[in-house]
Image (cartoon, rainbow, N blue to C red; front, side):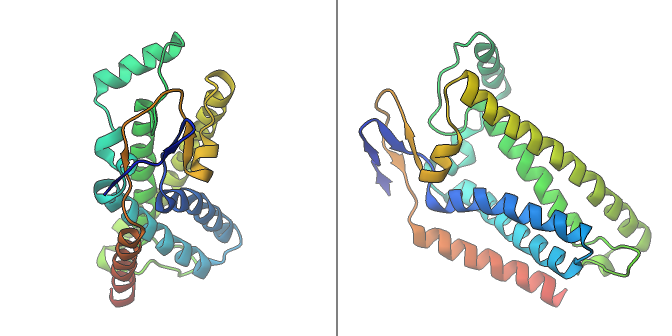
Amino acid sequence: MAENHQANGRVYVWDLPLRLFHWALPLLLGVSWISVELQAMTLHELSGYAMLTLLLFRLAWGVIGSRTARFAYFVRGVPHTLEYARALRSKAAVKHIGHNPLGGWMVLLLLTVLLLQALTGLFAHDVSGTAGPLAGWVSYDAGEWLTGFHAWNFDVLLGLVGIHLAAIVYYARFRADNLVKPMLTGYKDVPHAHEPLHVAPLWQAVLLLAVVAATVYALVRFA
């Protein structure tokens, strides 16, 4: 389905499922962090399951979702990305409707690190006796390694989040490109017309989320 969500120089860039994913993920990340500090491990596990569900949904939505959500739309090759980076330094880089080439690679990196965090949590355990639902699938030594990686990977994740936030400030301050507002409203102001963007139907996202949630539930329930 191709829809032209354009009016008065605005283009509908981010669909509702993607926006909800974008704001739910940092919320869950915060819950996961605080729950560990408070030793509320049941809450930590639930937030981890929810995060895994959202991440698997996003990966699938990056294939069958709206045009700007698809990886094929915003992931560019290394030469194209380097060319954009050089143009960015000279202030000649053009604005992109969706993710720019550097942002596209950051999305992939964040998704990868988040997915590693969620998956290793399924196998992790701690001294209090709390263990992930799949901890019994690996040896004790392997579980120890995965637990350590789970903790180390979280620090990496915090660093990437910091870079992501710094990039948002940079684009707002020096490129006159507000990246937050479109992720709230779905619309982005553009100086000239663009081709219509494919917008996937909402029922497709709801069905996909239900399938993914059922899969994650079955995994942790019957493991």
